[in-house]
Length: 270
Image (cartoon, rainbow, N blue to C red; front, side, top):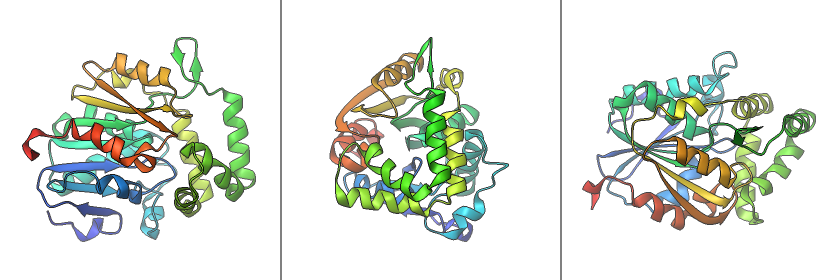
């Protein structure tokens, strides 16, 4: 696969095969978040990983981010569709984490020809607690979080890293903090507000591709009840639990996540 010049600043190709697997990262990370997982996955596939607009170390990512446009996850889904069309890909296996789970879900509903299956790590269609929905966040929780981000972003990021990992691995925390610090504070705040206030509960029921959910039982962002709700409302979906703490099991427990993913990769690779 040839990578057009226009994509080289934020898209990376890995693997030795031709069957496409696209990887979308979550908030606060960039395409490097997949490094550990790709060391575990079969090499004879074509892995396409990319930085979301506003993320990554290249200045082009900030240039691609437009506050008026990237105000909903639907805009990021349009970016993903444009990327796949530019590369001439169809029927891809899509692996998404956190916010990219719903980005992939939106794109798969809009353009089902582009996606053969979805593998979603730490997916959540909604984050707020409702009478009929097992979210855990309250509006007051979010107000406190946004105030902390706006007041002192660097201090907030330093405290957020241990919370999202659920452990105190100094090397991992340092790497994650670096990606958080690379985010422009105003972009980070707007992005997190957009994520936490999105509600895609109705949309996920329209997914027609096979969906494989992978969740940690100790995820502060996506409690078990949300994973079970999503499993129930996506027809034919499967759900695998990873016995790892935190919201980034593909980083902290890559071999376990790899085992779960390999069960759902296209059979042609074996």
